Length: 88
Image 1: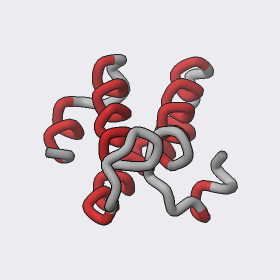
Image 2: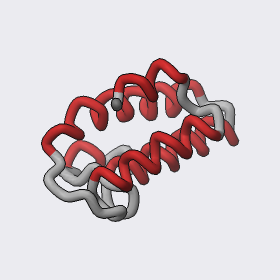
Image 3: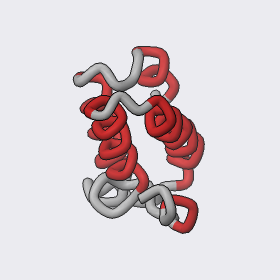
Image 4: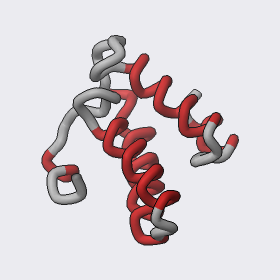
């Protein structure tokens, strides 16, 4: 995943960086890996910055998938309220 992330132009949950972000946060927590957690946090920042360019609103690769990802990450305590406020 980390090798292919720089080449991925999609931000959505199913085929894009949002899905990779969920995996990285879960992996980091399961294996207590600070390096992977940092990668996931940086990826969230990239997604937040690039989300304005998303032209679709579908679940797979659009804004709905990105919003669901952020909600899920917040619900499971992977991100803070501060990050959630940045996407509004």
